[in-house]
Length: 357
Ligand code: GGG
Image 1 (tube, rainbow, N blue to C red):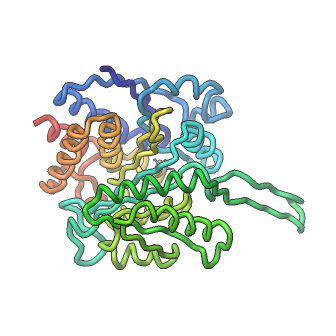
Image 2: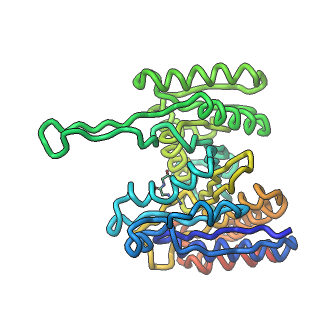
Image 3: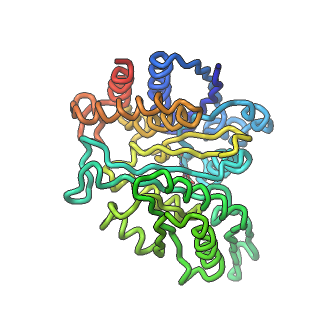
């Protein structure tokens, strides 16, 4: 069976790590006899915006909806296009129109990587952030009044729907059920955000009734971020709103040594639309063009994509290859963020080789 994968590299280091993501997928396809067909799209980048005045063509939905998955790099180049225009014009359109309401982000301390948290070793940090991905604080509902005057007013609403909250909680509880510790932590701020967050808390309590075997706790986001740093071993599955999940899923990987290795899956669990797989990191203009970006976030996202397509063994083989290369610790291969002096290509090639044998 042929699986059609749409490739959108986007901006900055997205265009540098993407070839390594594809290299790893091709090596995996060869080893496991998978038929993956890649189609590359130039839209979804700031350069496309500069040429066309928009991030995506009008018919992007029609062009992409028939694909089995989207493999995505990174978006944003603030010197060319304001960040809110590039993000809302591309990635957030995909998430919303393809109803990718789960953003699943593993945080795992890998062998060979030194955590910035003293004394932490592989096994100490191994949890998932489940981020609500289509509503919440990323609502785009709001407006401005009296712009440019002393009476200027800006308002943006948080939108929480019962459907939206319940479906992400259900996914998180079901994920927790598959984990040995069977633990779920909810990110809240119901002491300060007095309408939406108490609602979120109520829905957690309600949902928990259907999962009596899951140990549930909740933390306000301020102390939760502190606990990510102080006690990362407490966490197993952490569920949060769009904004809280976004923050936690950058902080979590930073605690595992580098955000450069963190993968993510934007999932439409019902399979009505393609899901999208991308590294957690952004376009990183500060290191773009130097060939030093860590490709592991992109490669690991490819592993999540294969698992989503039904090839768990193939996805696991990619993660094993990543672990193997990191454990070997060859400084000529590893990128700078993980203590080496290698390049995006040297690390990508080493992982592809490790997949192949
Ligand atoms: N590959 C992820 C990426 O490009 N992220 C850019 C960004 O700003 N994302 C914000 C978000 O995920 O909501």
